[in-house]
Length: 124
Image 1 (cartoon, rainbow, N blue to C red):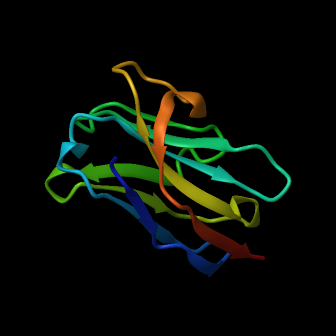
Image 2: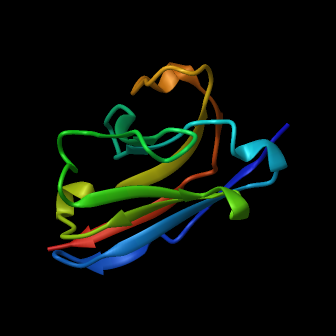
Image 3: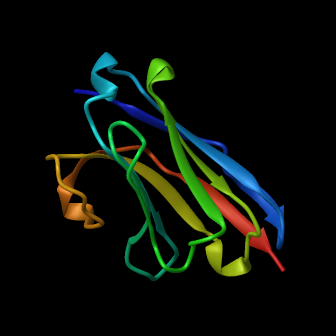
């Protein structure tokens, strides 16, 4: 079973930036689309970003469009989330996840393997 290791979270002031990383333990990383989700206390898990196997198809949640960028390096088995212009409402635990199937989806139920999560806290 592949394992995903999230990292890069931390405390940052509003307007700042962070880059999250997610590295897969399995060499079969490249055939899978990947996604990032987040969950704030008392809220449901929210879709953040999706990237296809080749990196050519990108989808973003409405709340992060224009501020966040998802990318991947298949040679390193790693997917990234560059987060700019951070806001206090971006505070959450961020999870990377591996997508099942070949179609684009923003639904958490269609991702079968999850990282442990990394905390992002944005202060005002």
